[in-house]
Each structure stands twice: as C-alpha cells, then as structure tokens.
Image: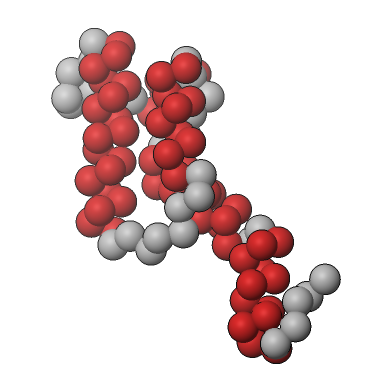
Length: 89
C-alpha cells in the first residue's frame, strides 16, 4: 500500500509535542483515508483494515516516531552537549 507508506513517513522527523486534540484530529483524518480508499462508511471501524495493511493507528505512529527521534544518537548527543558541554561519544 504505497499510498499509506508515504503517509506514515510524514512524521519521520517529527519531535513536535502536539496537543491531544490535534493528534485525535489527525487520527480521524488518517482513518478517513482508509475509509475513502476502501469505500467504508463513516461509522465503520478501519482497525482491521489497518491491521491487514500492516499500518498502525495514527496515535501509535505519532508516538513511535517521536520516540525514535528523541532517542536517536543525534538528539541524545545534542542534549548531552547542552547539559555537560561535551558530546556523549
């Protein structure tokens, strides 16, 4: 599902702390993409579609990408330089 793979990479470098209301709004839009693509109605759940398409719900994608970014060597080293004045490597 190339269309969804491109969507998941939008947050690849995202370290922005979004308000819960924004994450929920983006999750609704993410689910609507599945509904539109597969012809589901607004009241039908797309959780199974996401599972079989090997896609996570938006809130999990958001949290995973934030964790990956914040735990990366670049960010950890940058934080270490700011706190101690020397790189952690």
